[in-house]
Length: 376
Ligand SMILES: [Zn+2]
Image 1 (cartoon, rainbow, N blue to C red):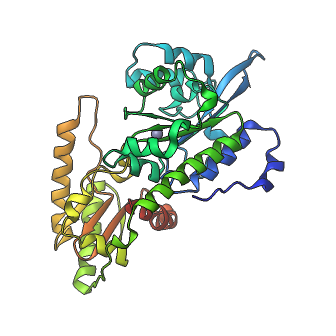
Image 2 (cartoon, protein in one colour):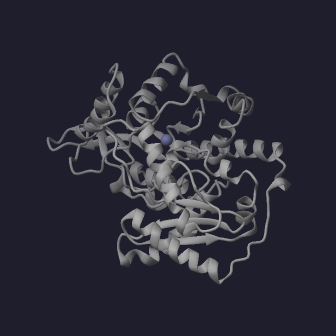
Image 3 (cartoon, helix red, strand yellow):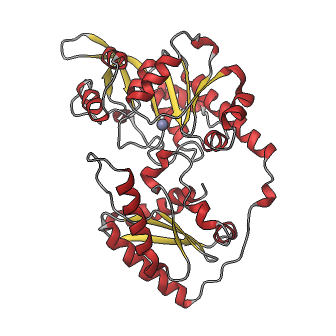
């Protein structure tokens, strides 16, 4: 994990705390091992002037629809801090009511909806709060005795809490767990199977702590893993296979409801994975953290011989999965997989194209963003 701090930017940032928040958020967003597109969130506490000319304490928190890699000041809408803290004191609040209240707490009603984790950011009594879904931390957390390993790595400098779905209950959990805590002794909070928070009055120290803590997790994995066990295999794709890919793209577009791109990764690592005897179990056991389901869905498609004809299996499995877990409040999204395994051939990635002019952007991000997801 490389520290990307660049002091040459400090002069233009000056003492603008939101500009500083944008800067270190972009640094986090550039590291795909910390956050995938749209994942993670950050905030800074400050003041903003109301229409009455009064200063109000606010939380500038990442708004939905923004990506940390490219976020700008407009992506951090000011939210009334006291209002958020009062929400955090409530005994219960449904998800839908919480989202309504977050919008009510905005200083600008046209601002983007604050992150679902805004109340949690408000409850952490430090100026800068950074949150990522770091691969290394979640990987260790997902192993047997993961919490013990994390305690061994971090000692007392990190608070480790069990998994709770992001939202109001998670904010309450952190509030309860930190009620009598001396925050000055703490460098971060790990939420098992979810991610990690760091925080400080100084943006650089909060960012540095994120990099240092994640690097410790990466070192632990390196020293406890035999990397020679990664499978490698050669893929051989012939003309019939290429025709299959074309048919698959068309069939996937129908499930998505719009044209899509598909890419087959035939690197030795991807083909090696696709050639494992238990690849179907591995590819469908769930993502690294629930946050990844937003962009990668909960499981991959697995194909034997004819992907285009076998795509219906994924569609049916996805619908069954939805029926099993949905409540009346849920709506089934499109049934197109986001990544898949073609046994002995390689791995697929799909990307929807909403508009033709987005094609070049999509090609770029398919290669550099979605491709990266498949590694996990
Ligand atoms: Zn999160």
